[in-house]
Length: 269
Ligand SMILES: Nc1ncnc2c1ncn2[C@@H]1O[C@H](COP(=O)(O)OP(=O)(O)OP(=O)(O)O)[C@@H](O)[C@H]1O
Image (tube, rainbow, N blue to C red; front, side, top):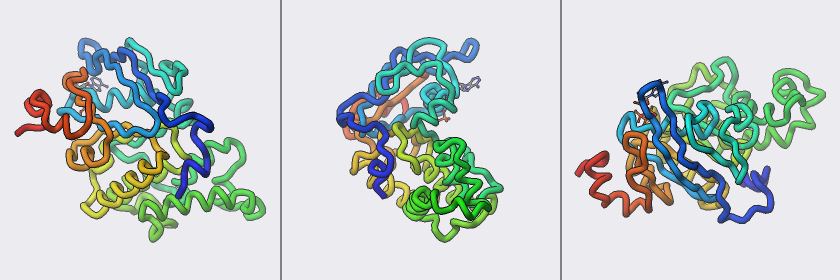
């Protein structure tokens, strides 16, 4: 599906513009500095793989970008606007979408209803989900959005379980559902936290293909935290290695794989 065509994230902006800018972002938990003065620019259409050992600060950095945590110091800018103190809800409404290490699907809703949630949120007050749930006279005006939801469901290999309650799905399908929900309304910035965790080999391959397809069409700007090194190296344009909250290395995947400091701190021989 052409997500960008359906709802352009940032109409009229050239591909080279910086979507995300982190300037000296620091997050402390009491005496622990989880993220230590991280400075990073992510241009539109780029996939940045964020790697590093357990406890390096990767998830905390995603939290700071997505508004779940306000940085102790430093600034976060989205398309040039300072969003450092914006809430997660505000950022989500403005196109920053996030998946989590633990899935966040609504168990009592079907797969389709889950995918419709962001569209409902976006069309605030129009009652899209209510239409789907039981108000037939309003269904016609929501047909395009339903079609978009179904396209994404198909893209993510979930058509067979479209009307199944999310609570009954195995973990791999739940992760794919969360991913479907994150991409359904053309995110301006997509933050993925260990998206292959819980996926079987076929599901991992499906996710890789879907992401590659979206990325190749320049539909997504992504920050991807991932421990599956082959997955992240195969997808990312650029790898940033965090160690103890700081950027140890930042460069193309092939260069990072050979970097002796990254090998010593994380990749191993
Ligand atoms: N809510 C919190 N309160 C206190 N310390 C925290 C909190 N969240 C994270 N930390 C600490 O911050 C540091 C960074 O944690 P974070 O989860 O961001 O690392 P990570 O790189 O995502 O690790 P992993 O790969 O294991 O998910 C760790 O030392 C962690 O214990």
